[in-house]
Every structure is written in structure tokens, then in C-alpha cells.
Image (cartoon, rainbow, N blue to C red; front, side):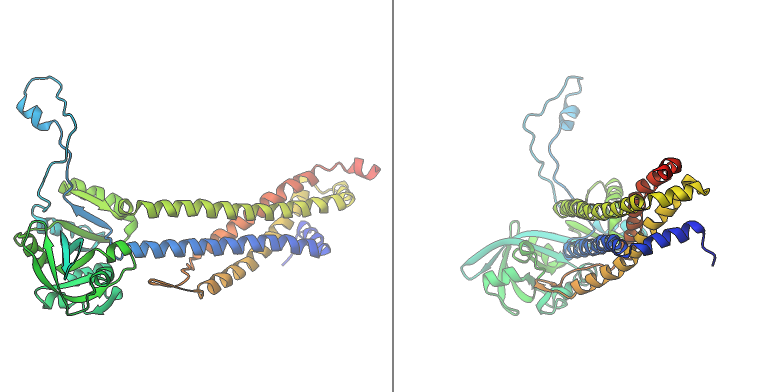
Amino acid sequence: MKVSVNTEIAITYLSARKKQTLVAALGVTFGISMFIFMQSLMKGTNDYFEKSSFSTTPHIRLYNENKVADTHLMDNFFKDKSTKILDNPKQIQENQGLTNPYGIINEIKKNPQVVAVTPQVTANVLYNSGSVQISGSVAGVNIVQEDKMFDMQSNMVAGDFHDLDRVNNGLLIGKGIADKLSLHVGDNITVRAASGSPMIMRVIGIYATTIKQIDETKSYANITQSQNMLGKDRSYVTDIKINLKDYNNAPPVARELEILTGYKAEDWVQANEQIKAAFKIRAVILDSVIGVILLVAGFGIYNILNMTIYEKIKEIAILKATGFTGPSVVSIFLQQAIYIGLMGAAVGIVIGFSITLLASKIYIGAGTLKYLPMSFYIPHYIEAIFFGVITTVAAGFFPARKASKVDPVTIIRG
């Protein structure tokens, strides 16, 4: 393939200064490899924490939210146009159960984005074992659907969660509850709800999510048992939990469900605002670090091309005197920057992948996290090439433009 004269000159200049070219390429290599590693680490940790939050939190939770008293009743009673003022309004005590929950579930299932829907009966309770008493909550669920949504099997420490459907008074407890009350599978525990009679329950299993607040307070029972615990009928449901094909669509779908049902639809973003804030902070820190690295690499290329122009100033003047135009000179030095960027990018991708692979083998051994979470996300590699080349082109443009403005007559005259 025939190569243009501009390209031949650019390659000649690069090969004549091998050490400087290598140093410039290494700067790009380092920047791109760190870009890939840091992006892989951030996405890997974000994915891990999101997955951890979904171990007990649905994409959307539908429930009856307590409302604060307003002036609607006063408006109905006092028909005049006077302004009604309600001083120090309080929350209105309402039934926590949903009206026609199974009809709502059937409507929700019609949404093509929904992959799983399950009802839940939540009861605030006191756990008693001997003389020890702790507070917590019991979630009455269909355990098969619960496993489908949250992979209960992966969190099991002891027992079989399927026994929740086989044992009438079965209770699946968190490891924190088991440790505090010295309970094992097969032991009995007294559970008392605020609005019901105390019930003797049998521990059929122990689970651990590694989320302390959940493991020390939450247990699972058959949905019928939770209804009995609260003295409610079989139509009583306090929550409807929903999972979607893509959890990123949870906020807009939640707003649609609020309009459809009139109940509060809390999406996972609202339920995990602190985690999302941490993600954004990490992203800002990462972008700052990567930006500085690429900026340093860009200055390295800028300095090398500047020195090349200074050393080759007479040759540039001769080129212009023999007919090379300003754009041709710009092309020569801009090509040098592009070649340095491409060389650095090619090696940087390999090194970045290798570092990411090695980091994924680092053993952590904390809770459910065995190894350092790393992501091998292809768009990160494409972004790395893009940013690497853009940085080198930007760094090479200004020296190239400077070279194009050289006056050959002035330089040749000395």
C-alpha cells in the first residue's frame, strides 16, 4: 500500500527519536491501563453493592403509606370560602392493608417489564426465647416466589427454606436473631405481634445476608401464619413486591403504578439513596484521577513534539520552501501524535486487561464477597481508546499548528 509523503516524514521523525517516542507512548499506555482498571473496579463494586441491595430489596415495593392530615374534611364541613388552617397536623391512622391486593397483582402482571410479583404481610413483633426479648419484623411470604426474586437459597446457613410451606408454624430467622437468642434449627421461639396473640414458632432455617440490620431483626413465615399472627383474614396484604427485567426502569414504572393504584410505590433508588450517592461520589473521584493521568500524558506528548519542532525547524523551513503547505506540516506532526496515541492505546488495553484480571483474583473473604469485584465491560475498552487518541490529538495539535506557521525565508536566512 502506497504511503503519502506526509506519513513517511512523520514516521521518520518518530523513528529518529525512539526514546522520546517510547516515553510519550508509555504515558498514554499508563493512562489508558489505569482508566480501564479504575473503571472496571468501580463498575464491579457498584454491581456488587447493587446486587447485595437486591438480596432483600425488590425493584419496586407497593404499600399503603400513612398520610398527614389536611384540610379536606374541614372544606367538606365548612362550605364557606374562608381559608381553613390546620395547626400542627398529625399522621392519620389507617389500615396498612391494601384493598383488593390480588386484583392489583393481576393488573401489574400485565406490564411487559414485570418479571416477578409477590404479596407480603409485614408484622412488627417481639421475639422471646427464655428471658431474652428482642424486637424485629416477620415477613409473611410465598417462599417459592421469594426465592425466585431474591435467591434465598444462596443466603441459607442452616435448614431448608422450603420447610416454611411444610411446617405450619415454621419460621426462617436471620443469623443475628439466632446468635442473640442462641437458637438452632428445630428450636421453638415465641413471637408476639402488637395486634395479635403470642405464637409458638419453630425455627426451620437460618439465613445470612451479611446486612446486619436485616439479619438481626427480620424473619420469614408463611403468609398465612403472618395473617394469623395479626388476626387478619386471607385477603390481608401489606406489601406487593415487584421485580423488572431491567431494574434501571424502576423509577418511571413506580410512578406509573402510583397513578394506577393510588398507593405509594417505592423504587429501589429511593430505598437506597445513600448507596446511589456513594456511587456518584466515586464516579467524580475516578473521573478526576483519570483526567489528571491523561492530562499528564498529553503534556508529555506536547513537550516531545515541541522539542521535535525546535530541533527540526530548519528542515520544516526547507519543506515549506519546496512547496509543503501549512496543512501538510500540520498533518505531519498531527500524525506523529496519533501514532503515539495508537501505540499507547494498544499496549494500554493489554496491560489494563491484565491488571484487571489479576485484581479479580485478590481474595477478600468478607461476608459474601470472596474476591475483589471487577468488571470486564467491553465499552470501557472502547472509551479508553477514544479518550487516549483524543488526548494525544489535542496535545499534538498546538505544536503542529506552530510548525505550520514557520516562515521559511526567516529561518533559512538565519
